[in-house]
Length: 232
Image (cartoon, rainbow, N blue to C red; front, top):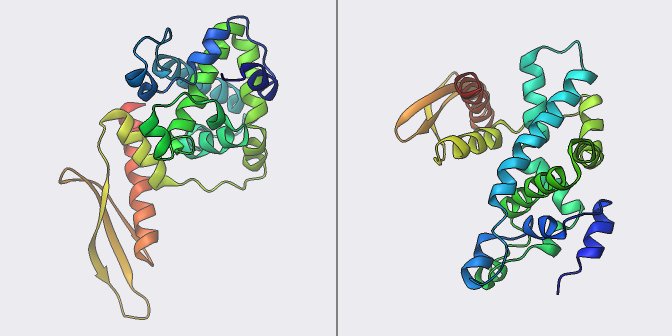
C-alpha cells in the first residue's frame, strides 16, 4: 500500500481529491498488468501539467527579467522545463518512490528512468492545478524550481542544446536527430569541424567548431532555434 500521506508531506501539498495525486503516479505499464485498476494513467495529467508549467515559468521570467528579449527568455524557459531539469527536481523529491509501475518496467529501472520521473513531475503539476488551483500550483512549481532559478539569476546556465533539440523533435515528430561530420578543414593543429544535424536524411542545420563536439552543439542550437520559430 502506497503511503500517500508521506507523499503529501514531502510535496507540502494536501490534496482534497486523493485520487488525483495517485493518478499522477500511474504509469501505463501498471495498467497493462492491472486492468481492473480504477484510475487511468498519468498521461492526460502530464499533458495538462506541461501547459501549466510552461505558463508559470513564462510568467515568472516575464516579471523578473523585464530587460531580456524574447529569444533569451525562451532559452531560459526551455532550460527550466526541459526533461533534464524536471528529472533533477523529481529526483530531489524522490518521486520514483511513489510510481505505480508494471513488473517489467520496475525490473528495468523504471523508478530511476528520466522520462518516467519528468512525466510524473508534469502530471503532478497538473494534478495540483486541478485540485488546488493556479495559485497553489504556482507556489509549488516556483518552490521546486528555486535552485534552478537561482542559477538562472546568477547567469550560471549552460543550455544543453542537443538535449533540447532531441526533446523538441520527439514531442513534435517522434524522431531522433543524428549528427554527421560534413567537413574538416584547416591545419592539423587547428582544425575546423563542420557537422550536420540530420533527421531521416534531411539536414536540419550545420554548425562549425574547433572540435566535433563543439560543432554538434552549434548545429543543435541552430536547429533548435529553427524549430522554435516554426512551431512556436
